[in-house]
Structure formats: structure tokens, C-alpha cells
Length: 272
Image 1 (tube, rainbow, N blue to C red):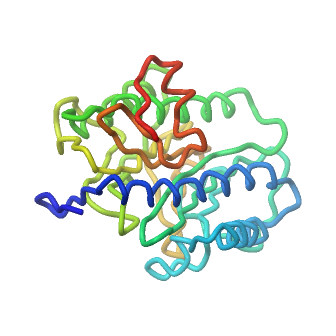
Image 2: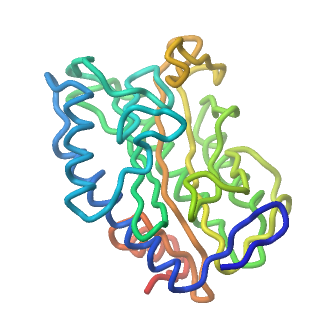
């Protein structure tokens, strides 16, 4: 493993394989949680399922104890953007539920998030989720060896701006990832192409657009974790951990490595 200036960590192929193992744990856990979550369930009960799944898969939850965080997942509901603490809240029909999950395998982290709806929701809410997830994949598809982090940021922003009058949360960003869950560089969801750190073989980043139906202004609740929209508008959050190999893009937290979405977009798949 090498370090670039500013503390950026570059992984060897074997270390990326460890990250892929962590990413698969995260991907399997999120898929199971998306199938499990339902009205009448508490967010604490959903978190308990997540911890059991992560540990049964031979991994350790990344979030549990991180800077004092008390749970294995962040579960954010409706106007909660990110970092919601699981607890006694009972989920209901029509809720929008973002689940953010991390796992450690052999000292390496995987980190991803998905937003799901419980039952019927308004058309504009369903569209918010679609736009946010597609913006994630636009950012993923913009990652190229020799390119810049700003290319990813610009692709996310351009997709959202082109889809409608959505708010892009500016205060929270994606990030580098590897032997720590959060590392340099930051990966903003707004930016200019050709700017920022050069994307180099061995770099792994978490790309995670956070998009809202209203204004992007937000506040952190008294629990010092949960971030909510100031105007009460609904939020969506999607995330994947990504690296770029000489063959193309490899989505470490996607169960298929991202092959289907990348190849449908005409982007080279770089997994193994």
C-alpha cells in the first residue's frame, strides 16, 4: 500500500480484493435489509438484523462505535438526510427509509447506502429516488484513470440539475476509503470537471449523492448525528464504494461489481 501526498491511500490488487470482500458483505446486507424493512418495524429492529447479518458473514460493522456512534447502520427517515440513529421509531406506510451500512473485512472497509419506500408514495418522491440513484451511477461512470475527482462531482451535479429543481446537499460529501472508513479525498456532489485529485490505480472512493425535494439547507439534531432538511422536505441517499482498474470501473459494493449498469451505459467494467 502506498500513500500519496495529503494522506491518500492507494491499495494493491490484493488489498482491493479485501475491499471487495467487505463490499460484498455490505451489498448482501443492504439487499436483505431492503427486503426485510416494513411498516410496523422499528429502526432499532432493522439495525439488529443488519448487525447479525454482518457478523454472520465474517465481518465487523464499520459504524458501531465510530466516533461514538451507537449502532451498526445509519437509518434516516423522510426528512432525515443522513446519520439517523436507529431506535424506537416505528416505520409506517409511505415512509422513505435510507439505510447506510459499512463492514470491515481483513482491516478494509466497504460502505454503501440505499433508499427504499414503504408502500405507496407520491410520484415526486419516487422520482426523487430514481434521480438520486441515477446520479450516483452518473458519478460512477465518470470515474477514469487519469481523470479527476471533479469529473465525478460534476457528473453527479449535472445529472441532478438536468432532472429538475432538486436540492443537492453540499455540507456532506463522499470520501476516500480503505483501512479507514473516511479518508482523503473528499468527493463532493457538486464540482467542476478537470479539478481535484487525479484518479489513480489503487484509489478507492465512496460516491454518495444526497438529494432533497426542497432546499438543501440542513440542521443536525440534538443527538449530534441526525441531519434533517431545514424545510422538512424529503431526502434520498445512495452510495457505492468504487475503484478504477486498468480494465475499467469496479463497484466494490455492488453484488455484480456494477457490471450490468456500467455495460448498459457503454462503460468498461473493471472487476475481477
